[in-house]
Image (cartoon, rainbow, N blue to C red; front, side, top):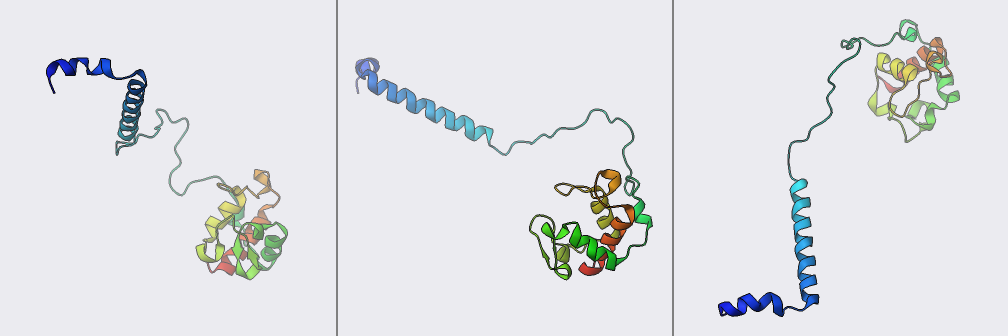
Length: 154
């Protein structure tokens, strides 16, 4: 192609062809920018600049009186049923087949963990201790926890 034709090439393109070419170039540029933004760059999370109060040491947590009580698994089985625990959890001994919370038969939680979760809740599980606004007193928390641990083999 002769150089004088190259100079006239943009003028020869119709307005419609120029618009299509511009749209295609913009689309390619957008794809390149999006691909660059999705690359394997460093991910940065929020980090606190100041801690107010003391940072809890491992093993420290809120005072849970039910941890100091001897639970009665037989009483706990009744509490498990009447408190609706089986609506969320699987526990074969109770005939419970809930699908929202953890499967207690497979997770086999320890007594300490069970008391903490029943009393204080976590994630989607609400607290059941009366001290936390729930419906169970400290002995009932100890009883249902003892039942869950015994029935699950935790």
